[in-house]
Amino acid sequence: MKARRQMKILEIVREQVVGTQEELARHLREQGIEVTQATVSRDIKELQLLKLPNGDGRYRYAMPPDQPSGVQAERMRRVFRECVVGIDWSENLVVVKALSGTGSAIGEAVDCLRWPEVVGTVAGDNTVLVVVRKREASPRLVEKLRALMG
Image 1: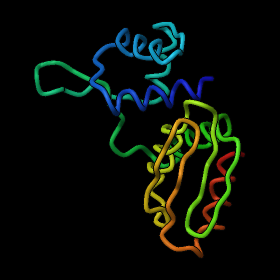
Image 2 (image 1 turned 180 degrees about the horizontal axis):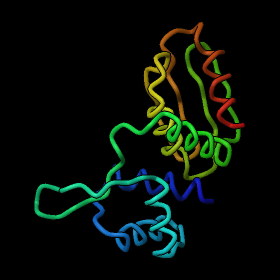
Image 3 (image 1 turned 60 degrees about the horizontal axis):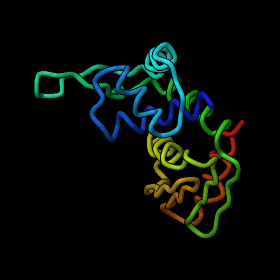
Image 4 (image 1 turned 30 degrees about the horizontal axis):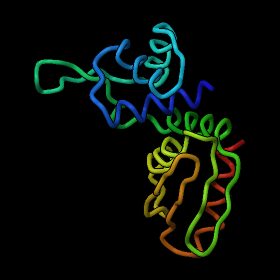
């Protein structure tokens, strides 16, 4: 649940202007995730979110620009371990099946890894399509993704 909540937080701050912990908690509740302000505060700290000027005199939460690879890799492993239920592939397409509501977070996680063999992702509610640059790279990419699952 923690990984799902934290990935939802990343999705929210990426897509919406959120300036307070209370606003973030409200957005999570609207998504069906019951949360306390204290939990949101801990998640913000763990995710290392920043408060940046919004340009209109207010501030908003944002993801740090370039996190150390160790922090990012550990977060991806946790998300994959807790949310991904299966991975399959055909030609240059890899399909990642995930828990309901975590597809976009998984897609964002794959995009954040910036692996050179990945052209990009398309995410749904519980499925992520990963487009691989070359067909020959697909089996190795599947191995890398499965390694993230633990």
